[in-house]
Image 1 (cartoon, rainbow, N blue to C red):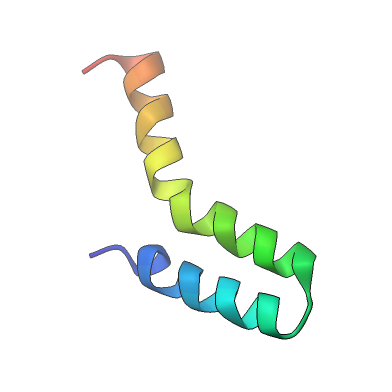
Image 2 (tube, rainbow, N blue to C red):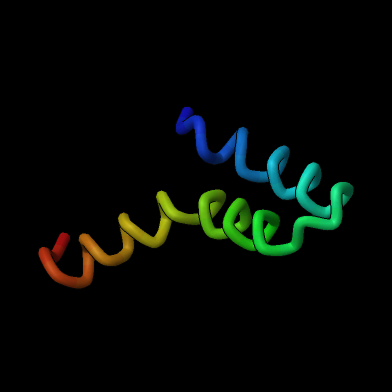
Amino acid sequence: MDIDIVLGPIGLAFGLVGKQYVLAVFNLIMTFSFFWIMALGYYFLGP
């Protein structure tokens, strides 16, 4: 299991509770970064 899938939503929740919206957005990006990188790899390198 990828650690960013676990830590991303936790950081997102703490960022929203602490009203640090920029950090919450960065944690949201980190949550889905694995899937974005995988999709880019399939797009540029093929299956």
